[in-house]
Image (cartoon, rainbow, N blue to C red; front, side, top):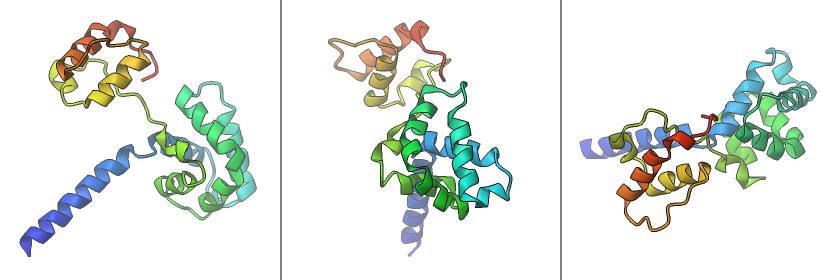
Length: 163
């Protein structure tokens, strides 16, 4: 019986860790919109739609936030309904991703600034490839994980400012 509870605890921890990176850009956008509104306005659908429009009209948004705004703009009314009921932002993003699955695929880039080799070795090859593609670098002939890590370290100077 004790083993069952340990297994359940492990599953809960894994779910929490997965949820922290799921729909991360969407959750940030929704939290920013929610933070910009008063409590009374957060219950009114027209005010929510206006706040979403105002947020997306900002000039200082990152490319990933702009992408979320692009996906959310056509479905503002569908977003405003659960938002007005006080649904948690993660649940809200998961619900609207049923209408547009790309919403939860937008992720923040892996931060590589000041990472040591031992930290890079914890990343998956897929993440290392993503870092290289964001830098505009191809790793032709790379087969082993160590080769990808070396290429990421060699191209550190190409890391973008959007982290």
